[in-house]
Image (cartoon, rainbow, N blue to C red):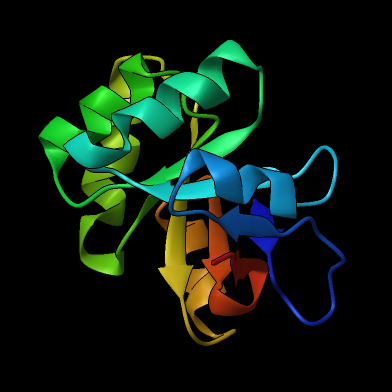
Length: 129
């Protein structure tokens, strides 16, 4: 299981960007975090074309499918959608890892038992603006 932002485990951070220009304000080889939106397709295409590792936050099955088709390395979901997202990712053999947003350490066990690829704490996401 992948752990991002846990206080005991050193991990890379994701840099939440809002436009392509924001990428210049991130460290080299950073992981980028972007919300799925039609307005962000230019950012996503830029990330793809430049082989930049990125995660997309999605809210439903359609966005999940789009995120995989768009080549996301990580797909972030809310707790209520985690098991459904993981099942779809396994059924369709997504290359992306499913990460669920959590707030408390005791939730790690819950999502490990569900077979979720990983968890991400808010501390692992740095907003760039």
